[in-house]
Length: 139
Image (cartoon, rainbow, N blue to C red):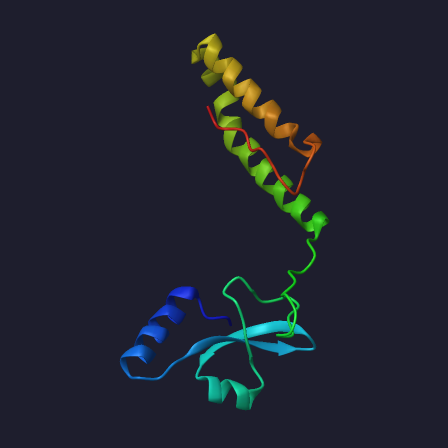
């Protein structure tokens, strides 16, 4: 499990108080980051760990010599996740359009809810879906 940045910051503070210099290192297997450690340079060198920038995350390609490379996006998974969120928002808004609640709304409120729900249904047709999604704002 990767250490969260806050824990690493606390460890770095502890190290600075006690005179040890510790840094963030990537634990790399077959050119892919599998975990992180905070250690002294000597210990990290003994383990074969690679000093890495904060932006690097698990799953990135990184060998310490070149620039780290983020893994390719899985657009199908991103689209499925976006559709699931969209479906949840539609279900959540179903209560607003039940006949008894709908009748109590002003025509402006009805128009706003109808536009919101239509925008949710139209999300997959957005030009950059699922890479960049312009989520509609709930009325």
